[in-house]
Image (cartoon, rainbow, N blue to C red; front, side):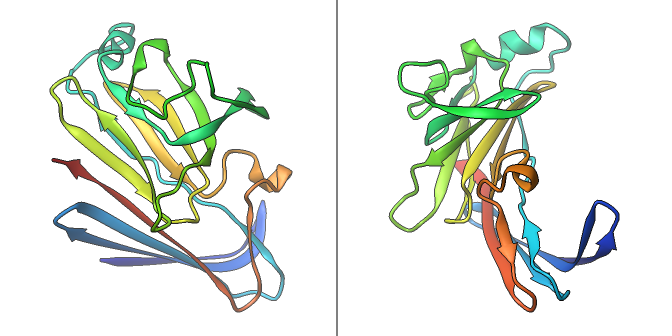
Length: 196
């Protein structure tokens, strides 16, 4: 299935881009290819993320959600944590901190609303985070070489694990921001699926 949307010079984003999202199912899960074509005559800043919410297998409410999520684990292949105070304020190495999720880590030190960057991509250019529920079900989420960071956020009865081409505030900082020249396209391939 393919969807397309044109953002012609909106207030707050005065650029003319056409975004196309193509969804496809395969044996390994859902694949999403998103492209942004610059239909205007000026360079267009661009960043994207998806917001998949991954259920923890419980039906908790309120304070019990943190305890339920603490029975889940997450692997995020990021060497750097983005420090935040509502917006990113800097970065720090994850070594020796609760933010080192490069190995499967129980979410006992959460709730998180944090980003990880300086990602370790596989040889084929992809990068993958893995969310594991207490029942052993594992969900992989990630994308191609354009993915530069992951955001993880506590959600009701689960966690959102978000592959991003740039973390928050990129339009102000320029960090990992993609600039699409007039007549050019930026494309990102994303995926989500169960692991055996």
